Length: 142
Image (tube, rainbow, N blue to C red; front, side, top):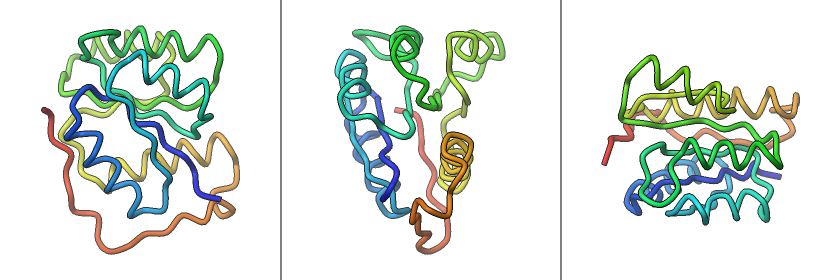
C-alpha cells in the first residue's frame, strides 16, 4: 500500500507540481492550500508524511506544525524559500522533523521523504514505492 503524503502550501501551482512529482514515485498525495485545511486533512486522512510550507497567509507553517503535533507524530518535512538558521532551529523546535530550502531537487526531496517513511515504519520495502526515470526536476519557490 503506497504511503500517503499531505502537501500543505498556499500556492496551488506548487501543490499541483508536488502532487504530480510524488505520484510518479509511487506515493498517494493529498493537498491543502490553507493551513486550516492542512490541519483538518492531517486529522482525517492519516498521512504518512506531511510536506509543509512555512509562509502561508491564514495559519502559518509554525502554527500548523504545532497544531498537528497536538494529535499526531506524523513526520513533518518543512519546505521553505527562506534560508535562515534561526528559523530552521525554530521550526524544528516547534515539532518539524526535517527542513529543506526551496528550490529542492526532486531526487533530494524524494530521498528525504523515503528516509522519513523508513524511520516511521521501519519497513520501506513493504511500501511498494517505485522509482521511474532520473530524478532531475527541481521545486522552486513561488
